[in-house]
Image 1 (cartoon, helix red, strand yellow):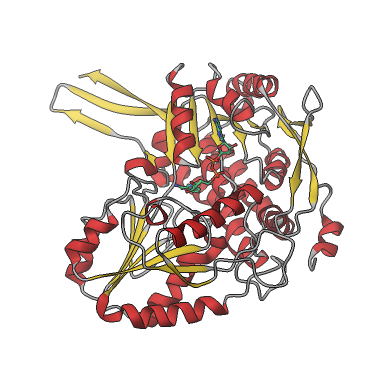
Image 2: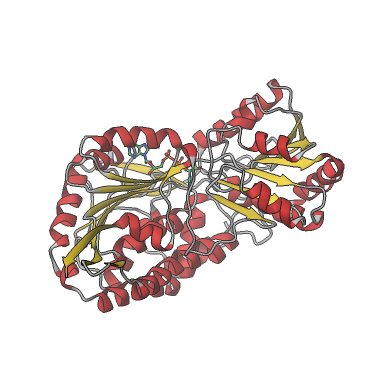
Length: 491
Ligand code: NAD
């Protein structure tokens, strides 16, 4: 594979151990599992499989570290350490981007221009945010002054998915550390490599031992479940499937942990006839197929106003056919490999289901010719389905979109909202009033007008309905990772 020669020169090992109390350690019972390269189906290395024992060790270390040098560190020094983590990620950008692409199957151009730089920026952003953070204060007439102080929540468990491994982990870790907490992270079992290196990076940046801990393993009956059930963990921030969120909520209820949830989505992309169709198609190709469609924010339900439906379809399908599917390290590749065997079969089963439900596949739907190895799938465009079809209602999380015509604003709003998800939506129109009117009625936490994935990290990020609980970003992250105490002084 192109890129791998260079990789061998600058990557020490693709095996992943836990990182507990500042040290890399294997599981006590020596258990490991294989990590598979989705692009070749070859074994990349082994991963230590943690369970109750390793979670206990990690939570114990994190608990002790809460009262150690981390607590005594001035906010000025803490900000410097957090900034330094971002600097070190940038220094190792090339290595981390290669590892991220090996682990996930995503194109290298994507991990090197989005995943890794954004991971670094997460630390830079929250370091700056902490420096500017003030406090709430109220004077109650001549009677009293109130002010609030923020304190860390304590030991926080961070549980993450495989689609944007380092980006999403750091999106949680940066504010969590800025707020003074200590952490036990459980990266996705399918993508453990960059998370493992993050331990070393944090140590090199000056994070005291025990503040950041990483335990690898699976969810049920494994490290994930052990973390969510642990009585000494104060909060869990989870990104993953809605179904997993329900299981974690039940486990966390026993010790009433604070929860933050970023869950699944089935996001509508609403295209009105007055929009600029060339711009729409350019962005819709990204919102449909970037990262193999494995982004929670991907717009998988495309609604097009009838006057431009045919023109949109014809242009969109033509452009979709041009997307090169293949080796993540080939610069021409636009769509890499899906994450793994199980997910690949799941996505294929939805394509099969689409046909059973009466849908018509206009392009894609199969493994590209001549590619026998790797979880590759041609980007897929499906028409002819209605709002009651499972393919239109359920999250597929792959390079598969459905396109449906609509005739009125009311109709498309009703269709867009006809789901138990509520993560994001895109609205395309040049009518200013309509943009505001429709945006105000779509049930989603994040709405873009005439764009997609444009992010300002100060804004609230998260979903409504079964797409999440709470918001991340700027002040919202601090609200989750801190406890507020109001102090009232009688005058
Ligand atoms: P998943 O829920 O299967 O797994 C996520 C993490 O949870 C993994 O680390 C897994 O090991 C762990 N886990 C699984 N069962 C567990 C249990 N019982 N207890 C504790 N931990 C457990 O999700 P996935 O397949 O890795 O990721 C894809 C999903 O993530 C999609 O639904 C996608 O929409 C969602 N996602 C949401 C956002 C967002 O910001 N809203 C971002 C990215 C991905």
